[in-house]
Image (tube, rainbow, N blue to C red):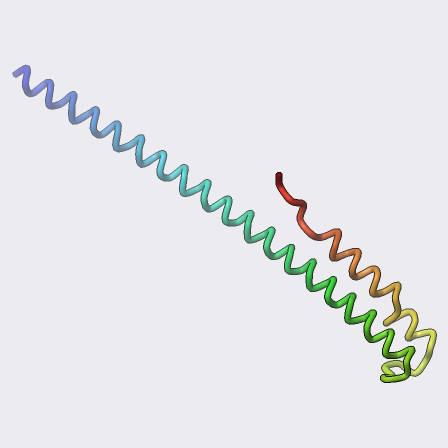
Length: 105
């Protein structure tokens, strides 16, 4: 009879250890999923920021070409300066820089 009691205690201990390992594994998986989601958000925000900066550089380049007379996108010089001018390019680049995620140190 004592052997049976010892086996039962041992079985309970094993079951408890197994449950705690399963709980720890679930917690680690949840933490890993959370880190992955944070990383994806950060990556998407970085991509958007870089796209805005590239568009800003393209706008600035097209403005230079407009002033050189190589291309003519808009009929009016005032519209050219406002819509494809340096201020628009600057705003796009600044927005892109502002959207870049801060580095974690």
